[in-house]
Length: 248
Image 1 (cartoon, rainbow, N blue to C red):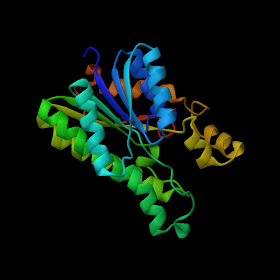
Image 2 (cartoon, one colour):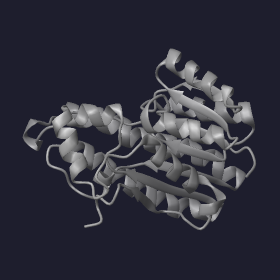
Image 3 (cartoon, rainbow, N blue to C red):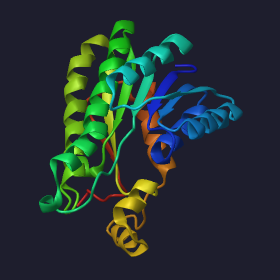
Image 4 (cartoon, rainbow, N blue to C red):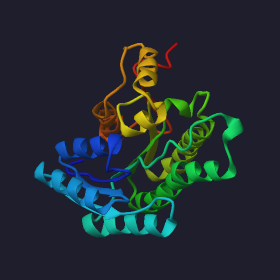
């Protein structure tokens, strides 16, 4: 589709930011969403400098009224919604199960699970009515494997993958596709927070068959592909981009 209308949550840093820039280079019309006004407006300006039509809308995906307004403002601005990338997420509080609490679970699930659910709910409301659309949720290799010291984050991404597959089955009859991209370790602020030290990050990178962590642009390319007509027969799938980390 020429000049698709794309909504990206959690767009201000890392994979979300790289994805916004990638769509701008593909002549998309883009709404970027996040919780920091100054960074959001700066990103929108950067996208316009690349020739894209772009807007920033402040939204916290944990609150349904803000998600509903985000989607409605996107449609009011551009007339439709062709693709949505649900990237807003948090690593939560790393540590063993014995150190987790109801509060740490809620803090992670409110963003990673509830935020994804609410985003899909209102994106599908529009896409199903218009008879087309593509949603990409951001999971992780931890969405389909375990990881010591990351039980709550792992559980949240397993939930994202389950919701993705279920929503895909519901939306297929309306001509809407729902997939997920599952990155391995990627050079982002979240990875630095999660690993804590350069030594720990290097150790994680050493376990990747390609011998390095990934770049956000490499994930952005997979996301753009998954939303595009080139992936028109793909729905309910988890596209893992991890340097071979889960191949063995």
